[in-house]
Length: 362
Ligand SMILES: C[S@@+](CC[C@H](N)C(=O)[O-])C[C@H]1O[C@@H](n2cnc3c(N)ncnc32)[C@H](O)[C@@H]1O
Image (cartoon, rainbow, N blue to C red; front, top):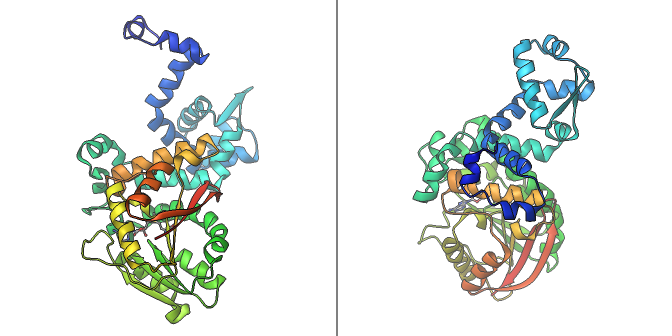
């Protein structure tokens, strides 16, 4: 709503004209942000109560929907009116129809993974985002437990929340992993170290891809216990090194021909990244190749991807650790250089979320 008051408070009319949009459109954009948490919960309710699914099959009026889903007419009307407001359904001649955005929200696996992650991992904690930013601590994590970082508590999160965390993490890496396998195996490494190996998904891909290779998995003990169970059948070809890489005394095992860090360095501040990369350098031999896989927000083709990555940064602020983020190319390259490593090759546009794979060496 544009009132005399907003005009008095310096609404930038000149810029408004330059943007080629009306003041009403701009005010509407601002209201979308003001009501965003309510829009989000309404969309989730429309999805989880089965209304979007019903409308995916056929258009229907509110009374029919209420009867079929055993919901009150009040609940259905309130939600559907909101659904029209946020563009998930349209209303014509008393019947509601699913829009294309509504279909995406219901059927697109990426949108589902993102929404479940936001709801089950981020939503409650985000109320304290400002405190996280001023204190440099993941203040939102207290809704789950008294850990310093989410990684310490990952294996102990309630099942539903843990499932959404892993579904989000794996959704993106599952798409990127097959694409980077030939790039990492191009120079025929015999021993591959996976730092931040998590549940062993990438290690498993490597062990299946090349029957000679040995994998050296590094992660916190909780995650490596899960990986051990998942990689039992590979016997001695999978080695486990439980470590907190931030522990000043912790050193990385030597002997790797290739080192992979996938979606790992974004879990740390720039100073921490430099110290971790220095440890990687100390463990590397002269021909070791160090691969860094990251979705860099300034290397995305689609605006939606940059939008998601910039929002994910605030998950790191509020829930994960309070001091890391999704980085830009120059920030990451700067850390690599400060650790005394050289970027040898850059592979762009890997996977759906346009990952960048940096190949570095001593
Ligand atoms: C975002 S996940 C990435 C997992 C996997 N590499 C992938 O691409 O899907 C980050 C991983 O780093 C591990 N990690 C975080 N902090 C760590 C630390 N201080 N020491 C060792 N591992 C850590 C986490 O436990 C988690 O498994």
